[in-house]
Image (cartoon, rainbow, N blue to C red; front, side, top):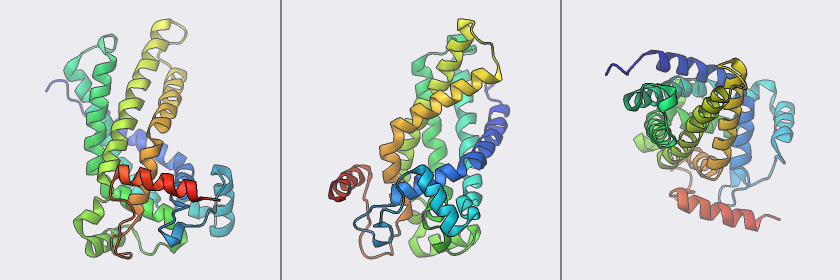
Length: 259
């Protein structure tokens, strides 16, 4: 237990909040791009956005600049819980295995990353559901954060708050299992190479590398997760996606049917 420390939890949470606020408009465009083109959901059947920059411009023009921050409240709440738990558990688990940076291995980092990602994402899933819905629906979304949590619970039950938790956990396992080890390995080799020390530049390069790797690795599951979280059980009589594999198959069919 001597390996446990409050610092990774607090610092990790604060870093996650700052990062979420700074990148939120890009995250919103990602959500809009992921939910469009669904043949079995009329609300999102139209292909409105051709890419990230087109989505940013069109959302700003049609819905206003503030629309780029639709869902920021649950997003920050999510990071306050998810980011804090994820980084805190990851750093604490590593210290249970090894005491020094030089002794860390890829296997240890991957295991610790996957465990911390699955636990934190599962606990924070309700905030992720609300964030996705507010991002996807924009000005069409009604109600504030607390009222919306209550509405989801009343209309869909506990399962509604944890809708998409399986692909969320799968995505987190992929993201954290890739991101955090890549970050640590990149930073370790940069420092040991003697090219740069333990500086801000080193952390920036490591963060950029791990973020890119995590995004590429997790994107297919992320699309399914986003669509599952945005659907409501009370809309019609059919859930759009029953699981990750079902979602991937339907997404492929939808892509093939596009003009």
